[in-house]
Image 1 (cartoon, rainbow, N blue to C red):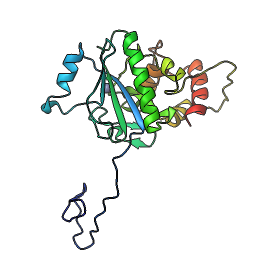
Image 2: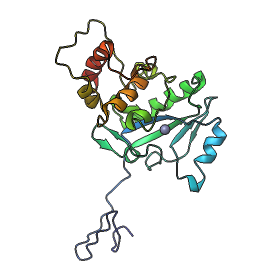
Image 3: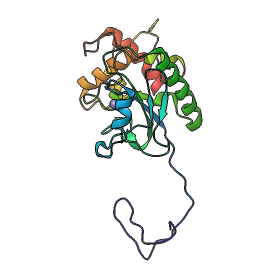
Image 4: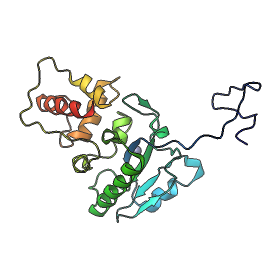
Length: 231
Ligand SMILES: [Zn+2]
């Protein structure tokens, strides 16, 4: 069927006389992991939301409070979890990522069983698809201002220590006078079209204890160190 014309491509072009069908293809491979919290109160509720046709939302995995992992969609297919999104030069993260939803209402800690299951899942996915260490990110990172998940209770430091994303060490860091922290956010991956909301997402991820969305001297040290790892 794929060798035959007519087929309409996604931009609606058609070249009846020039069509030469090929079957040399495969599914696309995910290159990013986007982590979320569900903002719901139970896994049952989330599984229901993600299977009702009218919602048109989904993710590849749901990690419940007791550590159970539900796989909901083949990793090679495009789930509807990230929405309008950007990280570095990658736009439309739904097309290039695996979405992992963690059952959490957004204002409570993540359970130990849940974090253990998540780490095991990340290990498998990183290996299976050779996902770069820089490409483990949160919904808030790719949709600043619009999304704040996973919340400040989520330990990205814990993930970075296991090779999923990077963390910083500000010991003996000397920041040059001409260092531009907003450009550093851009190099790390943030969309800086509105710097103040990019700063908010950076704080949620990297300085969760700090709820004031202003770049201070400590942030400059953190960003100066992080930029070397993410560039
Ligand atoms: Zn989300």
